Length: 92
Image (cartoon, rainbow, N blue to C red; front, side, top):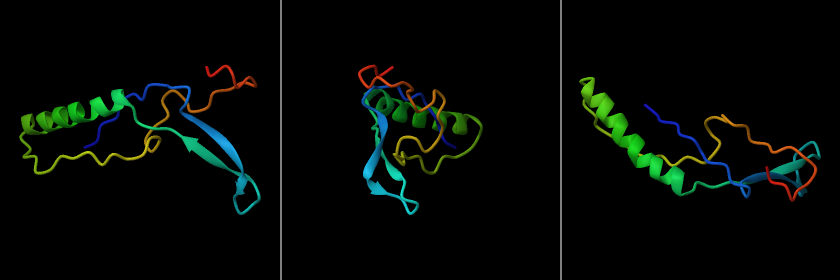
């Protein structure tokens, strides 16, 4: 069982092009600057507790519950990941 929660948007979570490092086709690679914050860190223990309670209430004996603390972006992009526009001073 897994849980997914909303990652709040922050202007300093961004993806930029790294022109100094290129892929095998000579294209610039992505520099991803994104991190979990207080909101996301608080959701994890609650999600684990709720998942355990659901399983136990369904008659399943829970033998392990843990946070694998995967990197942001490995699950979904419910609100998109790219801010569009030409003015870098306008983050939204």
